[in-house]
View 1 (cartoon, one colour):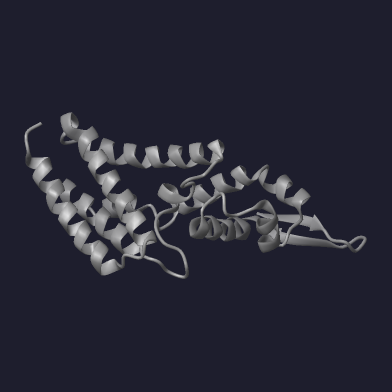
View 2: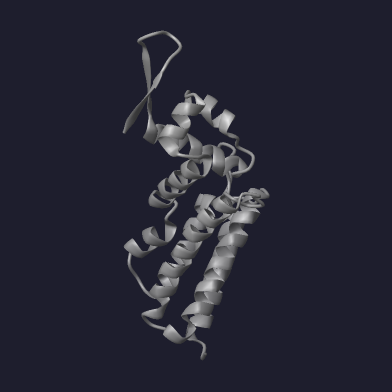
Amino acid sequence: MVATETSGVRGRRRSFDVDEAVETAMRLFHARGYDAVGVAELGSELGIKPPSFYAAFGSKAGLFERALRRYAAGEANIFARAQADGGSMADVIERTLLLAARLYPERDGVAGCLVLDGARNSADPEACALAETMRKAGVAAIRDFIATERPERADALADFVAITMKGMSAAARDGMGEDALTVVARMAGRAFRRELAAEG
């Protein structure tokens, strides 16, 4: 989708690509967190003025929601990617954790998971609610998957996976690299297998 903005010269219009704008905003929110990225900076980075910004996205939170959805629809949806390769339930969960270990370390100033951390410490309740809704949807997908075999333990096991991933994301933001995160992922994968086999 391409939106347009009127420039300061009469009769001239400058266009901007909304998809590219969402991609740029996604990187900014991911790198610095929601509160640290202001509307003025977003407008400058996107090359648009405030009226066009609000016309295109409604609000900063509206742009954040678009950024979260784009992020979750891409390679960051590691659980869906892990499921696509098949295997046992334990294989899929361990693959999910190993993908997190590969995705979360810092690259080009960006580390961790946008869904888990994009609204970290935010004072904006709308941004927090948007991120939490996305996070809960991800946990629900894992829980529903586990419930196909172990419905009585699905909640606890899904929480274990989600908490592990959140901890890995935070560790990556603190500088932990892929090798160390991979060790953690493999340990957590073994723990999941033991818990999966245990009685409720």
